[in-house]
Image (tube, rainbow, N blue to C red):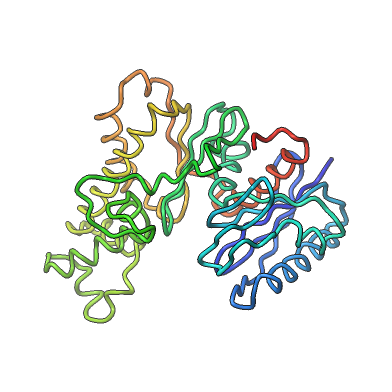
Length: 323
């Protein structure tokens, strides 16, 4: 049995995992990212964490895969721009490989790796055409066709969150106005709820997050208020789910997936979000696209990114990834 290492790098933590060639996670470890210490320090500590993981397992992995946020050059293994890490043009794969005795290292976008993990070893397993998305701080997606990722020109495919939506006037961090992720994301849900409080709507959230506490309100708080029958929270979830459904109603005819897998922290809202989403999809999508379409929540909440990165490394090592 061959083994692979998958790494999911975030702004707060880096999660490393050892998997077998089927995507079964054998062991995992987590280390603080501490990006402020600079990319060289981060990569050195990452190399140490991976080396210890391998030594504890007593195996010799074939390759290492990394998922990282921001813009990546997956062909050359360069983190082109990762704003939350403060990285620009960091040759992460070549540098990490030096710390691992020349072990092959491959890089890709973190959401692609999350979706790839779900597509080949999670909720999308068994389907040839899987469209996956993560509803988190932002909103991003990836398409996996017959086990291979779709990249688009320049490797820029998947920015689902930057679809412009008429009627949305929120300013996006990308510089545009009205991007889907400004409302359909964990931060977007919280923003809408805060606005409801500021407008003076009748809501239990106004009592719980009075004054300066309002900025502490999260999407999880909105979900809890929803479950208590709070009308403002229900309206926020209805609007968010409807907008997500509208975005997917545009994506479905373009990609014609067999399965849509939805993950990320915001997706934990479950049917509060999915019910209005499905209603909107059915309203705006031709029925024959929906006849065989399955929409599922992600299954590998804890390790999808790690598994996806590990199996992506396997694919790159074997020369079967479309680049």
